Length: 131
Image (tube, rainbow, N blue to C red; front, side, top):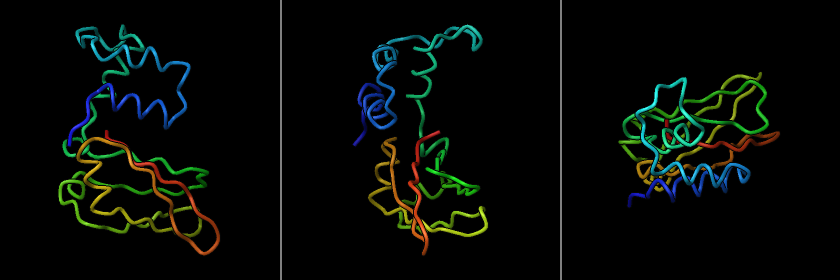
């Protein structure tokens, strides 16, 4: 099930708390991409973000309360769509996070996924968005 740009931007605004620019972001859905990068407005840049595609461009991962961890979820894993456990490396210790087939289905629909890592001392939120 694909979502529209407007739905994606609405979920992005809710998830990131960008309420101050929410109206400008939603208005970006009809903006043309004919402006040079240097001259692009906030609306046009938001429209570019709405064109993100996990299956084509891969993902970007943000780790909450991060202290040196990193992880990559490649587009090949998104396309394969089967459960996979990743190791968050760095920071002097490791965490793991499992992306389920259902999570990959959401990513194939260009919908962000928020998960929680596991570890014996603490956890991190892991937000996977489309690049």
